[in-house]
Length: 452
Ligand code: ADP
View 1: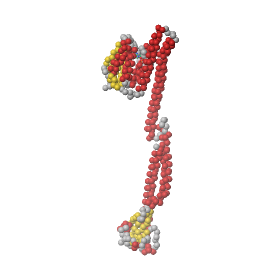
View 2: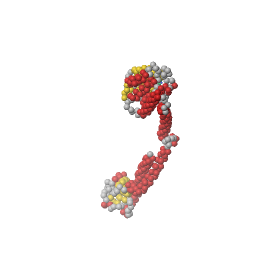
View 3: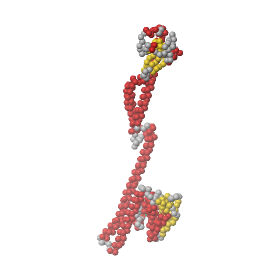
View 4: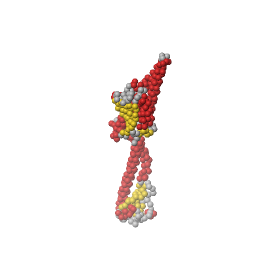
């Protein structure tokens, strides 16, 4: 910017300078020409006075050899006298402009460029009392002559002026740019900037504030995520440690021969159950971390999935477990399509239905239904199981959150099922609604954007 300003200011200076120079020369030249002419006229009038009084003979008596040329022309145009050339060698002057004017008006003038463009001849003619015409001529320098003579000093002057202009232009542009350069972009202050820059500075201030707020929000989010991650790691370690401690405890007392032979199958069964639990935990943790990964890659391939058929599949997968727990399970409703990742949707529905069986009572029921409502596909899973206390309803989607730890463990829960549901629904831009009455039952509705 500084260089641009310098360049333009310097350019403007040079243009103004050259124009002034041209104008000055023109004015000077006009002045000189005018002055020469009036001098010439004075001289002509003076000589004509002398000739009128003394007669033309006086001319032949004086020797005249200066710059000024005197010619006397008869009214028929023939040259009677010339101070520089023999009159009989000269052509008839009747057609000359100044002679014509003098013959008709008493006086006349003309200018001729003679020999070169650097000089011209100014003529002034006056009619004498005897009818002859007196012509006085003088050579004068033209503008070009002036230019040629002045070329060197002018060039030097121009160079000097250019030098001064460039220094001044650089200084001026520095003075203009310096306040902009000094501006602190991080903390702009609208008091020491140009008025024209104030809107820009205001915008900068608002944007800085916006960035600041966003940065703070991002940092807060990072802090929250960090603490969640730490909490999750601590929870995972704790959850993994519990079955591992049991397994190593059981194995240790068997190794040390502290278990009677007939009790060994029982202990082995315990080890088996704890190992199965470990497997389930690891599986759920992997599922969750996988879900977090694909949340960062929302371009994962989606297909059209019919939810009623999917619910029926899940129902049949859970039929044995329902029967084992003495619970009746039923699925109905209308067919409704969504666009999504089928295995993920299946996992979501499975987890919710599995909970409805796990947290139920003997002789209870689970009812799964699908329908379409306000452009949403709704999967509704109801049970008349143990229900969730009001205070816990908001927390059951947290990782490892269990209302009743021992009951959850008994039924093989990891505390991660509803977390997986929550992440999966977020991935599908869905919503979860939970209603539960302790001791009466629970209803979980999954709402997903339906296909047209
Ligand atoms: P878990 O693996 O322990 O089942 P979830 O994340 O699936 O973990 O569920 C969290 C907790 O929410 C469960 O431990 C349970 O206490 C409660 N819960 C979930 N579904 C139901 C339901 N249908 N009826 C009663 N309680 C439920």
